[in-house]
Length: 160
Image (cartoon, rainbow, N blue to C red; front, side, top):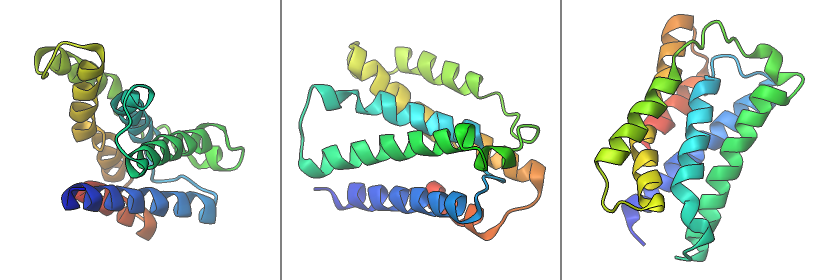
């Protein structure tokens, strides 16, 4: 196993745990961009399509499942949890993330290793992941208020 991949996985896992801790401890998602969370869910769902075709290792499979499940759980909490969803401020989370999806997909069609379904979506996920933090950064800039756990989440996410 590559030590850099492991470090990246652990840093990303820490960012997810910090975010889940914030949401469950405060019963609030204020300061968190739902659009960023949806983009990350899309990143993991498209990147890990190989779960159905290739087995690399138990660690790899577990991490893929954890990233997909945690991303979907965060989106579910922010959209559906009766208490948490009330704290989401969609007036601050106005970044047009569809442009990021479109640009990433067009880039994936143009720049990829092989022209296969899985490879196009893997390239798409790489390009989208590089941009997925933008709605969160714009939301933080607009709100002007960053609590401790949100700041730690963004730090670990950026570090990963």
